[in-house]
Length: 322
Image (cartoon, rainbow, N blue to C red; front, side, top):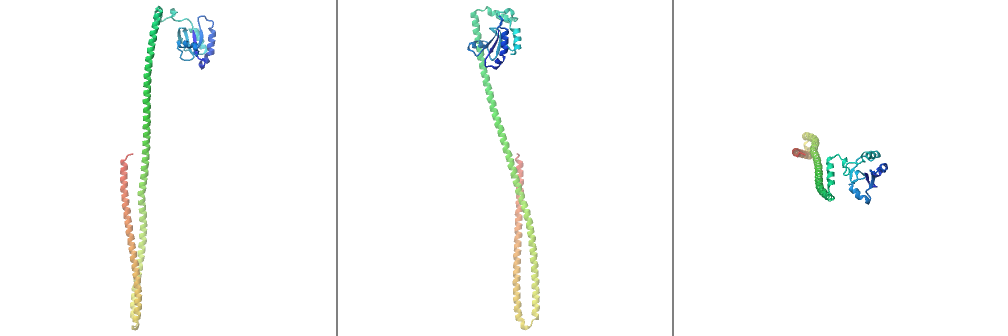
């Protein structure tokens, strides 16, 4: 026999149907060869499909009706025709032992032919029990393999989660370190700018103080010049006054003396005012110089303290190796 087990809904079964129909027509009149097909979706064919151990569609099998072999060739017409011509003929089987070449197979056939039906039934039952035991053992081993597979899969998934979490934490730590470095750079720039600014302000203030000192010195010199002029004027006035006293007559002495005394008193007041103004200017000048010295000293102290803080900060930064 040469049998095609199929399902109507199967695309491959539908595709090879025309080629199979041609083979069927060619061997339709052969008495010793049967070309046929079996619809495994029909209830009448379920037992036959189960007996033939059909696993997929289409499944082609050949040989004795009770001794079927799987066909593994192509599904085109030429493939099927050549196979049928070369293989659809009597072969080694329990009914054709004389066609067997395998001595071991011949011994088996002879052994089974000599057995009674009860012995064959018992042997079959024993074989079926052994098959059932093998299937049970196989299923048990498959369950073990399945459990091992799920165990390995769960372990792998857990390790992946741990690795993903570790990578995430590493990325977070890197991000935090970068933020810390950025903040340190900002602090460092702010620190150096704060250190440089007082020094710059101090230089500018020193330049301003120098200019103010020069102006005060010039004013002081001008005041001294004015005082010298006033003293010279006073001396000239005294000389003139003495000369006038010597030249006046006795009768006008009292009158002249009174006039001169008035002038002298006025001049003395002017001199006192000038001396007071001079003293005030000297006090202001001295106070301004003292303030400038004090401010300069404070700025120098701040600059020194800033330099010390800068050295300490640089030392700490070298210790904190990022």
